[in-house]
Image (cartoon, rainbow, N blue to C red; front, side):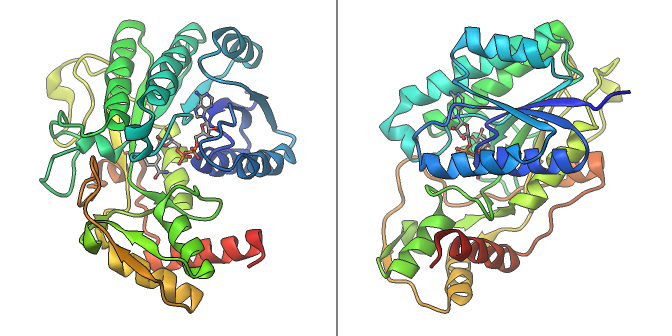
Length: 339
Ligand SMILES: NC(=O)c1ccc[n+]([C@@H]2O[C@H](COP(=O)([O-])OP(=O)(O)OC[C@H]3O[C@@H](n4cnc5c(N)ncnc54)[C@H](O)[C@@H]3O)[C@@H](O)[C@H]2O)c1
């Protein structure tokens, strides 16, 4: 059997970069697809792709998911066995400013990916959803089998739409499909729009950092290397359509009508935002100037993953302590920006 071929969309992004790197180390052939959008510093995305291109198992196409002709040509040329779809307009807060970007990238773009998965009869289609789909749910930790119908932003709504879209295609065309719900991912090569990056920059520059809801927030921070290890293992656990409802085990989100499942990928650890800030201060050896602010529209006070299903499917549980992960990030940041 030749090397398995994985199409990774969003390969120049934070998670796509780490996942592609891991898959290459594991001997997969990887084709990356990324539109290099200017939502944040494009140089960071280019640097990530340059690093991946040093591996001969990696090839890439630059383009937008919505460019159907280009996307189809790329998918036909590469003929993937597996698709991991991570490209998206990400970010909760930006979705209040520019909601249309989310419809274009996440709804139209994801549909194009699903069509390619159908044409190529892939062995497994895996796509990124988010803990934000739990919206106003307040029963913690969040489990995949609970109802998630109260999205609070258009970002969350497009991701919930992706889950429904994927379910329908899994049902109609028998495409084994896994949707990941990620929980606040952080680590080296991280995203400049996210808290860890902004806090680190602010503390180094001596500028105030915005702390929402006066710091009364909790997040299930997931270290990126743990996250991509979880994805890697889930690739080998494609859902199988059950013969009857009775075949679905308690706590499994497997659909009764399709080879389709939703899986939380989180650390299962609820961390106080202020403890996270203190870990950054400790790593930098410098105190932050704190600008306490109200809760932001569309934001939620807490997220916390029940990751039992991930563990049951893969035998794996993310476990990096946030202080270790923060140290790794700060070391990378200092090295990358020479500060
Ligand atoms: N990082 C997190 O904490 C987190 C949490 C929950 C869910 N997610 C989801 O995980 C996935 C990866 O997130 P990330 O943190 O790596 O984000 P990222 O922004 O770093 O990566 C996304 C990549 O997709 C590309 N892209 C965006 N729109 C595109 C389009 N229309 N066509 C082609 N390329 C496009 C961007 O250029 C970027 O490189 C996303 O789907 C995101 O919604 C991330």
